[in-house]
Image (cartoon, rainbow, N blue to C red):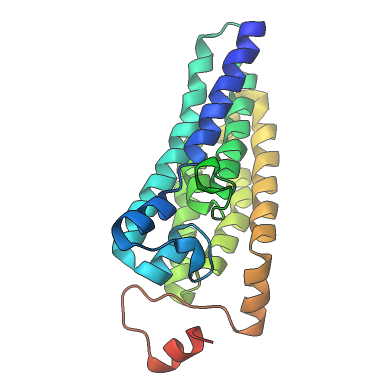
Length: 230
């Protein structure tokens, strides 16, 4: 049993280190000579990269952040070879790995513990547990973003519908994980609450009408550009 705990701790450390890979910081410095944490919203994440450096910089950041969350969760499947780990514990370990990976992104050891909000890493991690629900939430994110052009609003809405989708597909989750589906339901609620909390400043700016919009598929009107510079 001691070896089991040792393996769990080791894999969780790996999950944290994966989450700590500061893709936005490294790409910004290596290819643009910019520390993204000193510009825009000062977050080391996809949204700030898109706002400050554009799509060519933001896309690889999103992909890397997504993959590090996905891998961090799936690395926990190595524990299935341990006879002491039941299916119930396996899903619980994956859920713990989600939080550990996101914490790594928010407080990266490789970037002075100053990272981003972890949305892309969270999406990747959830995809490692229940990919269909992660896809539905991402579709909601894209829809809200295309309509309103607020990344923060899209992230908040996608996070809030996460527990809704979990409830809708509770039957398939139960068939896959059994009684541990309760853990996944609670996990989805915690994720929704945390996303709202981490975007509390954005919510204030949305209510005040001062939140910056991001336009990808068309040129921004001059009035909007002036508004974003405020």
